[in-house]
Length: 229
Image (cartoon, rainbow, N blue to C red; front, side, top):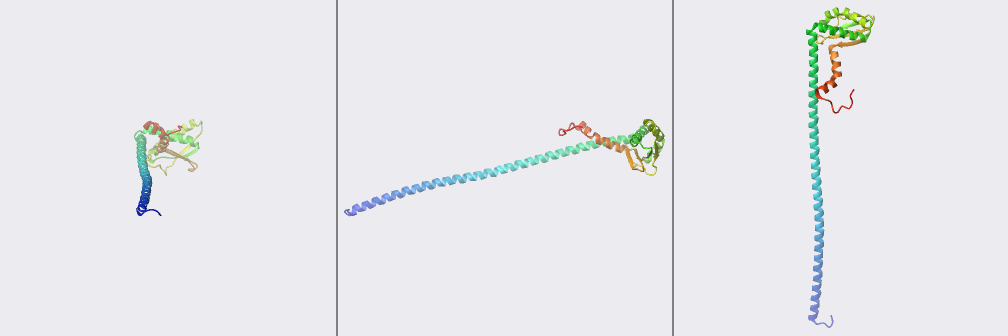
C-alpha cells in the first residue's frame, strides 16, 4: 500500500474487516436459514412418519377389535342355533315318545284293537316274504294271541294271494324282548330271510320318514332347504 498514510492503511484494513464481517454474517444467516429449513423439513417428515405409524397402529387395533366382535357374534349365533336345534330335537323325541306310549297303551289296554294290529302286521310280513313255510317270533305274552290268530291269518293270506298257502310256525323257544311294544318277526329258510315287523320297528321307520314333515309342521319350513322330495 505504497503512497498511503498509516491512517489510510488502517481505514482500508478496517473497511476490509467490515466487509469480511458482513460476508461472514450473511453466510452465517444463510447457513442458519438453510439449517432451519432442513430442520423443519426433517421435523415434518418425522412427524408425518410418526403420525402414519400411530394411525396404522390404531387401524390394526380397530380391525382386531372388529374381528373379535365378529368372532364373538358368530360364536353366539352358532351357540344359539345349536341350542334351538337341540330343543327342536328334544321336542321331536318327546312327540315320538308319546307315539310309543300310545302304541304301548293300545297293545296292553285294547286287546281287540291289538289283535287286529297283530293280524295286519303278520299279513304285511307274509306278503313280503311269499314263502310257503314261515316261522314267527312274538313276545311271550303274545303267544296265546298268536296261536289264536294263525288260522285267520293263513286264510286271509290265501285269499289275498289268490290261493297261495302258508304254514305258520311259532318259535316257542326264542321270544321277542318283553319290553317291545308288540308285533312280529317272520323268517324263512332257516332265518336266511327275516322281516322285522314289530311296532317298535314300524314306529322307527315311520318317524324317520315323517321327521322332515313333522319338523315343518312344528317349526315351519326350513329356509336352507333347497330341494323337496
